[in-house]
Image (cartoon, rainbow, N blue to C red; front, side, top):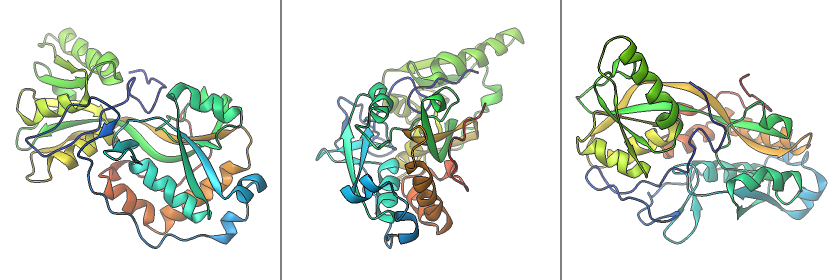
Length: 304
């Protein structure tokens, strides 16, 4: 199955999820009116040996200018006050603390972030970018997460992604799961003389989750952090959803910086510091995305 190279793996930004197992609101804007309360990781402090390696102009400015596009829960989206929150945000905030800087988030159209980095408008991009070979031709990427596709199922009602012929499966419209994954799986079923997979596509990711919770579909496929977050939010009051099978088609997320910029190794060291001391793991667990954590951050980790 082909991998698309927009934000993460989805062709559209996923909607923020809200509520409980019985109430999951559809999105109408890039703000989440009922955003989760997520604790900040304490005890993150400046590491002089890493911060001293910052490019002089960034160190002197006291801030890191970050281009971001929202929404894409749980990675970057807005709460009801308009504040940008999410896993990416908490991790970048932690990195800037290690570097003794303030994070200066600036909203942008997704497709304009890397050109703006090339032009020097932003120091770095933060919008669930898949690190791929084509992008590495124009920017360097500091990896911080692995994302793929992940199925979910109702608790006690298992579905096997490798044998889902005849099942009803929810997806968000125009994602890779909609355009590539399920059509390929369904075609395989038909070729084997089995019933096709009934793909049920929704405009918003939240509607796909609601359909799964309410038993209107047998399973759901989405980007792995989106699925993990949906399960975490749906299970707040009672355990109703769980993963179905393992994550597949994984690829690294990375933060883009100018090609050849000395900022890349500084960011990489800061991420690795947080990985090594366990604070990175805490941040991931706070957002329910720990299945995608990495043990080592690298510069340009694209899979060929």
